[in-house]
Image 1: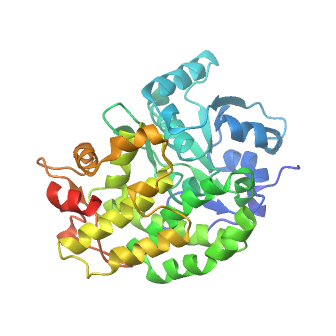
Image 2: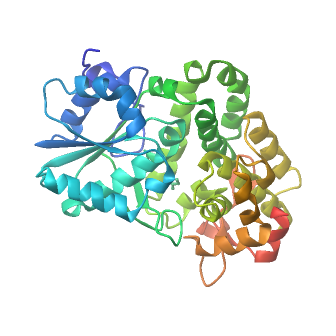
Length: 377
Ligand code: GLY
């Protein structure tokens, strides 16, 4: 593969972000030039998912021409998103004599985006990062918006920092090497974007689902849907970078999802957990009178059509983990959520498809545990 230049690759136009987001089939060949243009540095450290490095390592190196790059790999899986792995990666950079004039390039799914992002946010008090998401979920969510984190035992993403990338490079071709289940996980976040912000976008996703199921990563609809999701996310994070208010709507479905993930030690797909979380939280919105009856069913229908589970029973879980996710256990596990205030867990909830409850600028509402337990049952 020959290297391409930044000028050859399309960036999304008119994004309200300080950094460009490139979305184009084959864009990986321009990675070296993107780094050179937006995050030039003396040393380049690539932190990549080990499977991705195996599949795309040659293409990644080729994009940098003859320039030296150091490749550090991370085994796949949420269990890698720990303080220990953050410390190891940081120490590896020190061992390689990286200094302040370094750029980190994250290449992988959500775990690598978050973990490498936190390494970059903290190394020498912060060095630039370029995000190269390789899963659908990371393309439409984790790579954009500057959230970085690791998972301490107390819960998911509870230690982290905001650290915007210098550029995001999305190459839909990289989805080709992934199993269908990983593609479906990304659809959950895209459905979320439709529910929280744009009913017509949700319709467009539903319309495209049969073609996506048939053609997978080669779907013709996928690149423009990814672009649409990035636009929705960009609009939200541009208005509220540090999640003081509006950005909480991106958490729709996630309060329940994070609780489930933690209870099963992250041995569940994030996308599946979010799919179930959206249905449950839709039910909560109905039961406290924010949404009209029918919303949760509409969300469940979308989720089902994407091949995702609508209830805890439908999660792809090893049998020995099932007993851990009773409604009561899930309610208890929500108490560590980042949105909890004064002992009450708060939820970002939809009023209808395409519109979230503003709660007078708070964008989340406190919900009693009994209500949540009933919605889970
Ligand atoms: N993934 C949710 C957010 O970026 O705020």
